Image (cartoon, rainbow, N blue to C red):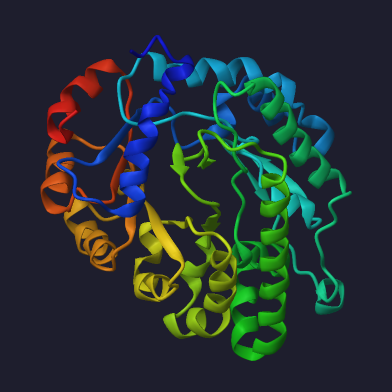
Length: 362
């Protein structure tokens, strides 16, 4: 069966995703295994070569140079029998939207970040997304190259974009962007609203160029197919907000982003779990993706289970991505409802998959 469909993308897998979004009764979670890691910069020869430079420029991003490695990684779906579809998006290593809004992109060991600035309000008062700008054109060109190259063999998606709070933290500085909400809340909130509008505009613009796959939409970072329009939201910098600040200043922006997308979902880290109730107040947010990060200082499964259960009790689909030892995975599976649960499990090789399969029931 795996060899019949390029990259293991059997259209019959769509049914599992539909059940996930509807939170239908299930005997086991939706499960995907992937050899890909946390650091996409180093997974492609084209982006690994950038590390010889200090800053990334649009001209350095040549989409065609990514295609061979992209196909190589997608072919894990022909070797691994699981429930998921595999596709592609513009390089996940690039903070595209920071570049589009004028930030310099600093190349660090293993990652690329928008260089933190201290722009004044006068400079930011008219900030807007210019679709004719160099970074926007590079991003949309990458989308088009993938669409053409895929020729329907795999789904294509929007790229990974940082959210309004992350963009404000880059443009104003992480500490200053939070102080702004305290001492100049009206001006700071207007900035978040404009950044949200830019996020929404580039997302919609990308989807105008991306064909549906089996009648649905896709997010390549999490191999997540959806039956309706999808937006991938992210607010990592909100970990510096109090619940009150989030609700007053950023929640309205996130609510507006989710409003037009029936399958809106948000990426979260353990560091933002104290804001979980506020995120769940966004009615149109259908799914939450939470990274499991004990290896980098996050709580163990026992510490994350109460948060994951709150998501499920709120009738939201839950996507958990991370690496798990067998005992961790058993605790997770035993502690959660299989309805609307998708486990995106990062592994090192086939032997690890064989050890984990009986636990998840595949």
